[in-house]
Image (cartoon, rainbow, N blue to C red):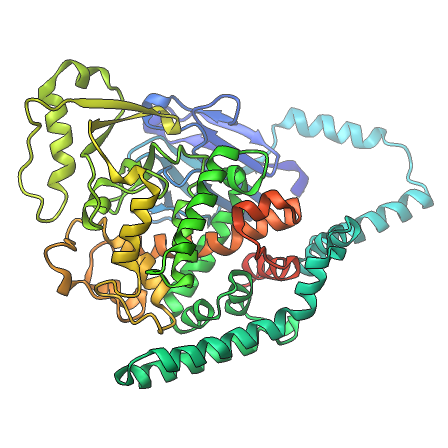
Length: 548
């Protein structure tokens, strides 16, 4: 019987073979925090507070998902001899294995097996003691099961959330009524006007390129007026982001489109990590800093509006980061490093984007470095050694290193004390406009649909060790679509994944805020006046969760 089966996790023999379980719930969590997890592992192993979870949807439908983007999880599926590291949810089966931190880290075998005999016997007795079922009870249970099946379907979920939106009265707000009535025509008009402006402003030599881009964009804008049943994923991205150019770019770049869908599922699954942004009362300070960045990006004439709107979401980091200080980020080598400022820039990124930045290094325990200047110099120099064209580096005699504790994973950033432009919003936006704006080196013309996505890809490619934007700009080319432009670089999948995640955040997070907290002045202060239409959000969420 299915009800007599449960999930177990067994450590492999080299880790002692201990069997944990039975677990009968829908989710099992592993990490170092006893309050958050079902299985607690020592932090000394490198396990973070909430590391990985296993979702049990049925006995033959299991999903493993890292809880934090910095959590390293390795999976052996289908009897594979070699593991693969995962950053997104993945389906697993009975007897598959997972390892935490490294491929040689704590390793568990996933088992679906019978409950202990004593539990099964007790339940069998309990079933025998149940009173006889009456006709009314059978009728009521039938109704209950029918209702559960109905609302568990994709359309049912949309209907329930739509019902809540209507019943709460939010749909009758004048702004929402206006959006519902005029949104289709507005997008089509915006697409046509954008094309007309582009044909006037662009040089004659770019006319043929612009014409093709304009046609793609008009088709994308025109599709936004179709009936709901005909909307594609890219249509809905364009509607929510109010960006027909982005919709057309995703339609053209299949690999990027697939990556955006994949990352959107992860963002949806990690809603609590973004509570600081989507909840008006949760992270006022961080959300206020985010809103200030939005305003500065929008006000800079060197950035196309679509590019500024998309770059904003590089700052939507999970876990309520300290936006003016240090955070822990994963770099293009897959290592945890120091990120600094609102956008979480690594030292290597900042250097390549033309910012004055102080060298830093992420350390677990600051004490050995506080006691030894040699150790400080060695750790900081290792950061510099990974940057192309940086040359040798030494810690000058009259310069000292400082230490900044980070809440994420109880890490510490050691850094050279001095001015660091990553902490300055005005300087960040100014440099972003120069390197990623309409005149940015190695980017497509601003009239092209994929300009904003290419700008975000260049932003992350600045972290690649083999890239030196200051010395070899001619070798850096994003004029083709991002997924093709990255083919020459070793860490191309990392750059593509980060770009896709930014695009996913740009549509998922405003929708989360809109559906969960409605429309109010506090949300508009953070996200701007053009909050997405809840109907579009419901359809987009359904497509992400249910379409292949």
